[in-house]
Length: 170
Image (cartoon, rainbow, N blue to C red; front, top):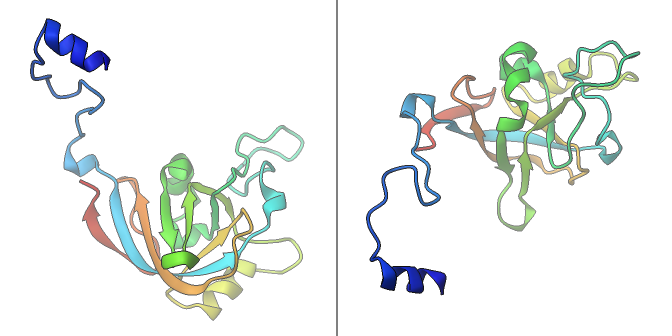
């Protein structure tokens, strides 16, 4: 309604790029890119949400700097090029695993896969699923086995193991 009133007073003028809710896009070299492939999707443990993340390097006697957010996934950092390059972009990775009604979406990487009661759990999982990306949905999503996955990653990191780069988001 307010638009109609304003247009009667002063007809709409073309707005320069970046105004009107459409910010200018950065150069395509800085655009996030889309990765397609397959992932072994594991059921997670919702009790980890809000607790210290495996990416947190703080001593355990200090308050955590990185906690596990809801609706995120736990990963094996080696499959993403290591924890160092991945740590600064944890919240910038998002995607969908599966298809149709059995698909699950995630917003961010929240933790590393592993537990203290199984020695080298990451190595065991990677040897049981060679060349396949492994994702654990920390919100407790169901075990989906190996399913198609689409992931959007920042330009600063490569696509993870088991996926291929399908090009920039724009």
